[in-house]
Image (cartoon, rainbow, N blue to C red; front, side, top):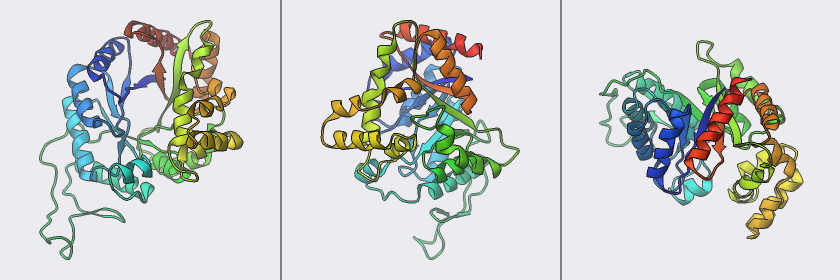
Length: 348
């Protein structure tokens, strides 16, 4: 199993990149650069490309509605060139609150759009003259659309690689099935090793059955917060407020994908309670309502034996690359956490 980590998107990027340099020396394999509604993710990916040497640099994620398919392909090829072949194009649908609220774009047909974007990107990277007609995208526009002057073009520059790996942050069954069929990687959220199969097993199997056999197996990224040592159990609660934000506040009632996932794990009553509390402004109570059993099962915090058991469960469930938050108050402490984790992974 390889190891990846997510960068924060609230600021302090120069300091964060300096830390990534130290984590890279300690063996970090991949870093995810988020894009929410702060600074864009691609600028930060380019800066990382200039400041690192071996770590893979992934967008985690670029919302599919905020750029045209060809711009996504151009962007990924650009970062791949800057990093000498270390880019990963992470895509996701985000949610209607952000897409329609912040970007003013209609949130529709996420699975169809993602499928077509993947196909278009791969045509662009191969420098094919782009002609595509899908349900959501068409290049060039026809003579009865726009000015009628559009021409099929191919990428001017030559990409470092003929394909940039594509990872999709998918949650719902149809999206997960499409990801398992077409993408190179899958980035789920709130991944529960023992319950992942009941949540996504059928969708993954259906997608893999249609997968091109010449394409490498799907890379699966999941993990949780990491802290290895005695007496650290209280740190498991560090993620409560973020979980409450997603399960309770990322969407309206009946329109929260993360709440659906939480309920699908068997926490139906808790999912409703967390959402009701959060939307009523009771954020502390919402965080406290997250079951301890869920917190324990989705973190890698505790004695070495506990962490080894959780790592084994993740691997058994199909995870190929850990996606973790390294605990510690300083860069040095987080590097030490990474070292401990790498040692345990090597034993699997």
